[in-house]
Amino acid sequence: ARSTWGRVLLAERPELLRAANRQMFALAANAPCQVVEVVTVIVVFSGRATIEGRVIYMFSVALDSLTNIILVILLSGALRRKTDDDKATQEAGLRRAEKQRRSAAAYEVCADEGWQGAVETLAHRGFTLDKLLAFYKRLPELMPHFSPDVHTTNDVVRQAIIPDSADQKCSMALKMMDGKTVRPQKMVTHNWSNLFRDLVACIVSDALNESTFGLVADLLDFDMPALERMLDAKALKKSYWVCAFSVNQHQSICAHNPARTVDPITGVEHPVCSCGATVYFNNTPPLRESDSKSIHCQMNKFDDMMSFLSAADAKFSQVIAVDRAFGLFNRAWCVAELAAADNMGMRQHLKLVSHEAMHDEEATRHLKALNVEQMQAARPEDVQEILAKIHDIPAFNAHLQELLFGEQGLFDRWQNFDVLEQEAEVG
Image (cartoon, rainbow, N blue to C red):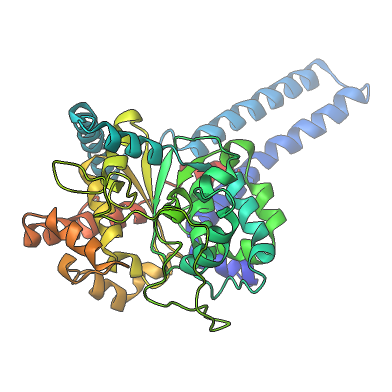
């Protein structure tokens, strides 16, 4: 704990240090057996071994093997007694799985073939982690003034994703995957005001089964090769759906910058795209007869897309990439996605910058006062569309609090994050 990394680990990953301590104890406990075995080997092979010596040698080998077996069992957690928290977590998992099963069984395709086709097309725009990292490494080329501590996802979409995909007028995900469609394993809920570097760090952290992304963000900044060595082939092929990459921005926002947003470093207004692709808003014809929503608009199909993917894959889950300021919970679309995923029984994986973030009293007070009517979106019509789906706003707000802070809620599950896999990695 005297070194810089030691202090970071002590603050961010105390469970790893505890696991390391247990395994150091195991090594110390096994050391006497190794000493006895070495001494007996020397005696046996020195030519002065008696029958008694050979018996002692065989006994030491057997004792060493038995000790190793016992220590492996103890370190694996196989004999760990289940606590009340363990039982509550297991019961919550069973309830979630049953909710997912019922939701999948109740799923029905849309009667409007055009709408259903648009939903399924959107749902197959996943990308793999290795392609995301390749894009991130290209950022200095695509956006020479990119600063990881300053530029947000919105900055990167406007100045890198849209320009780089303009030649094909397609989603960045489709270009990254060389035109191959991919059904994602996970959907990432995030806010565009978050640092882009932190969004990438959240996704990498998920692939590494980490609950915090602070250390990964540092590695993205200072030691990308070390981070890549931590990711095995299986992790690199995990697939994700992220709106910034998976939505075709050339049919959504590329030709307009109504808020006249600017780059935080240069002060220059974000450019608009001249690709000429047709842009579809919520009310752009053709419209679905049942509710007059645009069939080709992609921003009005997130709920339907989530339902389709969850029904197709019981393991389809949600990664919640929480920014350092907890601004995600003020965004209407993000909160709507959280509630939708919970209603469908999807697994939800919360990613925070650090364990210390949970102790931010001001952020906690703000979260406990959340009101869906006060949430924001880039387009006012999006807020109205989301509110129109909520029949009882006070009940929705209460459900949101239960989802965040209730027993087995997102923050409770995050604090009880299972460390057994991490202990295995330390071993």
